[in-house]
Length: 271
Image 1 (tube, rainbow, N blue to C red):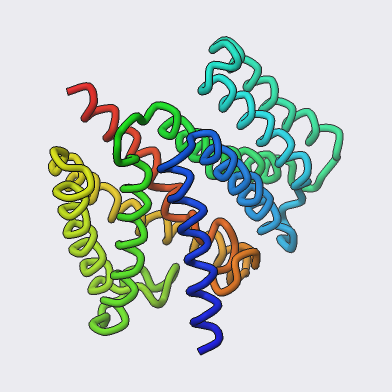
Image 2: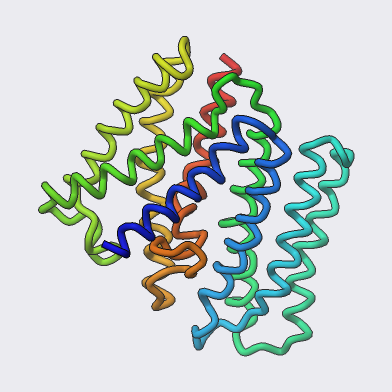
């Protein structure tokens, strides 16, 4: 019972930290997501602390990631000219230079993991900030996205708990089932209908298609992070959120979903 209470309180704080700024301040939302990005990037690199084949410096990776993220955000908010993005390739190449001087055992593995951290963590959060800045909807697009992700996660768990029999991908995530997956998708679509008819009236088609994109990509995001954790031998990516694990444990679905959701926003806006 104590664990359920702690998990519920921690989850409520997390939801509030995400949703409240989205409705009231783009600047505060940017700060919140920036903090989550830094913490998530550190978590990702520290996943490989005990891996005998990989020896990376999380400080170097995080520093490069923060600089790339900072430049991108300043460009998004028009505080730097677009040409400032040309500073990013030299920053990425710094990872190669550091590895040359470190004389590590497996330099190619190290460079690959450092680069993967930028792709897996930094890039999705940059896209989040882009949507925050560009969105002028009365009902924030990211609020709807997060609600659909959480709806899918919650009802996939409940459906799997009560009806789950057929394993989805047991070698990666033994507890996930096809029944849970289908249940999560169905309730995500139902939630999208509620959003499109009540909270964002007039955009029903947008939210239904969003649900059809968000539900499967959320599942893939969860499975991808499960694969990372299984490969590195850890249960959670961190312990910063009592009862939930780390930042990446909460953002795994979002990280995978956001590029697809942004692509759909651009297509919908264009047509």
